[in-house]
Length: 338
Image 1 (cartoon, rainbow, N blue to C red):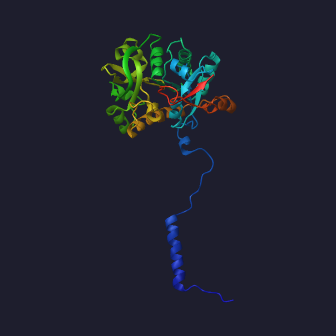
Image 2: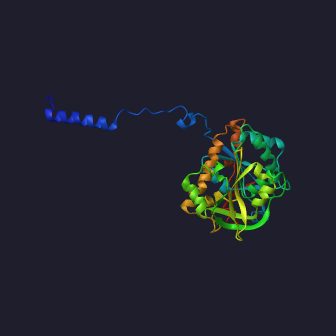
Image 3: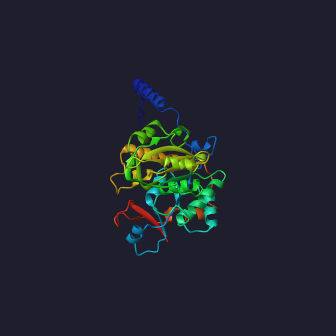
């Protein structure tokens, strides 16, 4: 058998090629397969599996007629679920007309809470109002307090509760209207907008990026007359179709409580009205709100008593219904509960 010997030039070329490959590739990288992520090893441990509750409410008359016959007692618009899921949270529906122990358990288990928009009463005449009043207190009493974001009807309920039960609403005309935010004196103290990226703040304040669907408003003078300013910062105002200025964004001075009269979730997930802004800029600004709030929730480390109770509470146990084809609804989909 004849063995072949590489010519000297070919051997040198092969060695040179190996050296070049080694220089380009560098040392093999060590793969980390166990242990916490880098973000979770910062000075403050973050909860990377946050769970946010969304408060259910009674069906409106038109919704009730559209989905009949049924045994439903409450619903949640699916856009709220999708919105906060898109920022990295899981969702638990918070039921109405439950006993106090249920709401105490909820307040002790969640990492964030949403009071959504809708049409229920903001007073204790509704299950939504009764649950909201109790949760508003319970969330504050937790250590640390549980973050709360209130939207539209939820914002109105927040102002009602912050005003110690004095009715804060005035009739106005801002349904199916998109607007910029007018920042109010002292807005820089806000965490949500005061720390927002410059491009997001520019979108929110110079374009019609906020979607409004409300017939009642909190006027700035009412905000101060009811001494709500003792606890909340007036962050921004907007104007209705008649030029009436109303409070559009607030933030608690010390608690992680935030209120918006406008609907950030609609920019991404609702399609029934042409007034809803769907530009890439409007979507970017709305997504910032979801990202901001879920990041607040990551700083809360509460959890359900057991994995089984957590799994049983999640929205994954329910299926959304395509409601937009059944009546003139502002909601594409809803979750219904018996």
